[in-house]
Image (cartoon, rainbow over all chains, first blue to last red; front, side, top):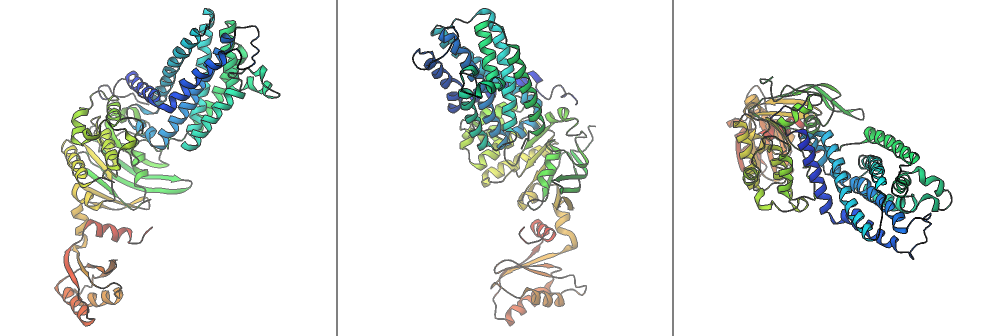
Length: 254
Length: 314
């Protein structure tokens, strides 16, 4: 690979930044995307914080402290997976990916821009959801913040890979359906919000091995016990490697 | 390297599922010229262009754009090449002008967005979301996106498809200007008048290979043939008429094919001379047919194209 000649293309960091801003703005401006990435998690957070709504075994923790990490896991899944899968698949169908690949941005820059956009939207989610949770009495341990950020990073890698795998292989309409359905299933029965230990039957053993369960456990471990559970981190890492390899091999640009 | 042609393709082969869509294609497009690639649907035009844009990997042969390999030297090449895809490639959720500004942000010294959008009439729909644009408006926006980076070569895949005559004129004007500035323009089109008006060099592609090339004048002058068109009742015996006209024409007998291009409209190609015209009117008179709109002319690019690629639907 030769480098872009100076003086013709904008510097690489500016191209990626431009793409990231462009995509972030599009997501935050799109009503359906906002519903899935912000409004739904906020509503769920407020609902689950109510003591009478659902019987939860919080293992001695305060209810809001127990619920918030799971909602953050849901937020990561909605942005890195559902929202990203849907935008990428429609961009692929409309030829946007191919057109951008012919500009100085290139395929690598496009991918980098997407990842930065996901992180930017997640930052907004963390601020909003964190703010609501704090208002509801959430008291996260300071020592758990860094492990929580690591967990979010690992979860983002795994779920963005899954998003690209779907978006690069299925039709846009199919991605729209699958991405929303999987989000609901993984949230309810995948161990993200409701911990695996509280799930019925075989789900209790399966969920910790799913990326959703691992991400939920990792965030709960970080924000309840101030440490990153090694098992969950390894599960997320394994999913990332498998899904990224799959996406790299199977992704079709048109 | 600065003297290498805009595009140089040697024996390009591209297969999809074992079937060769492009099969030994050679093409050279010069800088400062408009090269039009014509061909029926499925002839391999778009695939060829996509190999030049680095979007497809050739199975065999060599592709060079500005002397560079579109895949191996992509990063060096991309800032110097402008691309307008057949399907536009525009995200639907943004406003037209935002899309153009975004593409321009990828370049160090882009064209003035306001100047370009005024030239192409994008001003009138600048704040409309791409989703709500008409086909012709999208085409103009996609063209602006291809030109905003001041490319040295542009690839335009059916640039004026779906455009109204005013937009098309604006696009043609801009393409001529690019040529004057020394930009190499490669366009595919189904519009023969577009190729006749714009192209310095025409390449006709069929079944994945070039079957004719040259300037429009070269192509239509081939064989010094003329055309004779007329209109009368549909369903004439074209074979009989062709025989009569050939017998009447020049002794070397380089006549004559008779085609009923649409019901009741006929086209005679070959060495049309005064005796052929007389024979036609006599043949009609003998059958009590009144031929109208009789005209003798030069072959058009469309005649050449249809002669070469056949008149049947595919």
